[in-house]
Length: 176
Image (cartoon, rainbow, N blue to C red; front, side, top):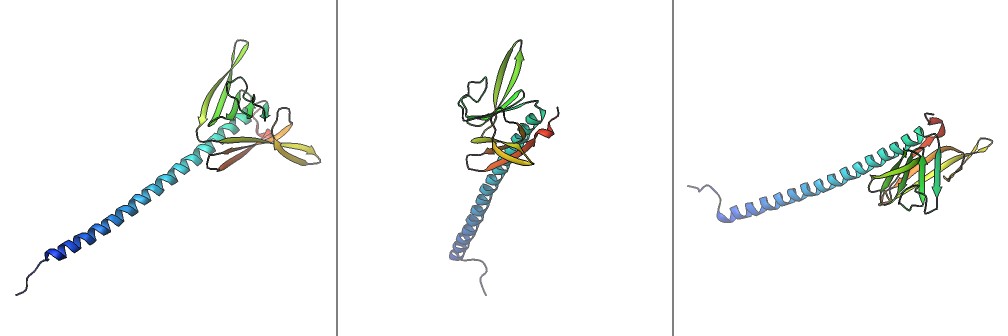
């Protein structure tokens, strides 16, 4: 007559093997969750950057005038911010100061007041490039400074990890 079942040693070895397989499966699932979370955070950052560029482009298209400021600590008009690169599109102003900021100018009687709010965290730099017509169909692209006769503005924003996002808005796209 043969005995059925497991010995204590067989049961212990089986339990150890099942525990190791379970631990490996748990480690793989945990690592997959981390990778998924990183990818989702990066995609959210991408979406935020593209939405910010769309908002800047909307302000550019809706503005009767464009003014740029480069390499001057007083670029942010009417605000307490000291930035060296800013864009004013009509009644909206954009610049980076520990994040992307949007200011809006409100007329209060005979005074103009700027109200600013951080539009997007995680933006480390912004650059406004102007496409200028030189004649004979030639164009030149350079930093946008006030007074330039501009055909288009290329806005590029950077995240702290060096990723850049860019969008160009042409003067012909304006609603006015």
